[in-house]
Image (tube, rainbow, N blue to C red):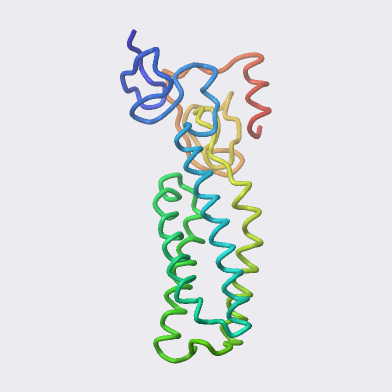
Length: 207
């Protein structure tokens, strides 16, 4: 039996788990998941790659401090490559923090490469200034790891603000979120939750 997706109005089969167009869950039990299964797997992969990048950064400042700068031509491209891998999925997931930090990793690698090409830093010699820069940078990024690891995908239901997850039940179907001011719109074809369902939704988001 064919039906309309609540999110994008695409024709979908009632037996389908997710809409083939926008990825929204089809049945009621799946409606309030945080992203599709594919999106959740992608987010975990991005976080895993992030952890490897942090490990490379910390190894980088340590080997630079002790004069083993010959390792940087190997660590730098690895960091650059992993950061580049993380950019497309983080942009697709609208994971702006991961996107910005991955770009900064790539810029760091380019900056260090320029430093070696201009003989500011020399292979196989202690580079205290570079080690200090890498130490400060890796410390900051290690601190941001907590925020990255706790980042979540937005709830798929249209009754939650996409920016702050404020519960929009009882408000106009078009307007600005009273919590963060983000503009939202809810289709007239989507039934408004009632009773216990509203209480259940309130526990998931913010109201």
